[in-house]
Amino acid sequence: DVLDGIDKARGSMMLLRSMTPDIIAMDEISDAEDCRAVKGISGCGTGILATAHGRNLEELLRRDTYRELFDIKVF
Image 1 (cartoon, rainbow, N blue to C red):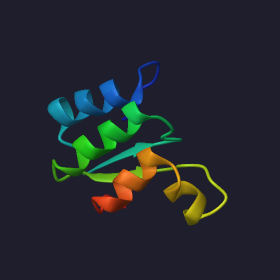
Image 2 (image 1 turned 135 degrees about the vertical axis):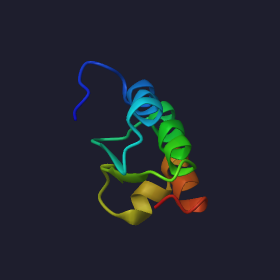
Image 3 (image 1 turned 135 degrees about the horizontal axis):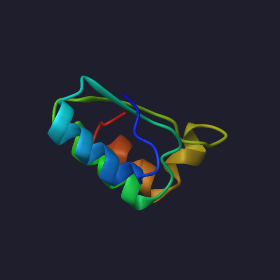
Image 4 (image 1 turned 45 degrees about the vertical axis):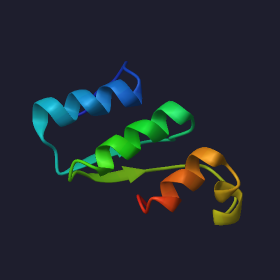
């Protein structure tokens, strides 16, 4: 199933509540709201497949939103 035309955070919460998916996939998590959604999903037993653009891991970890996800072992 695919949701389109809705922001990632709201859509992922809708999916969690209504479909109990094994995995939620998101393209280009990029802001604090997207990362909060990923954190919420990670605590529900649903797997996450997400992309985040950066040249390398070091670059991603310089960004607060991504570093927090790594710090809490989401990825």
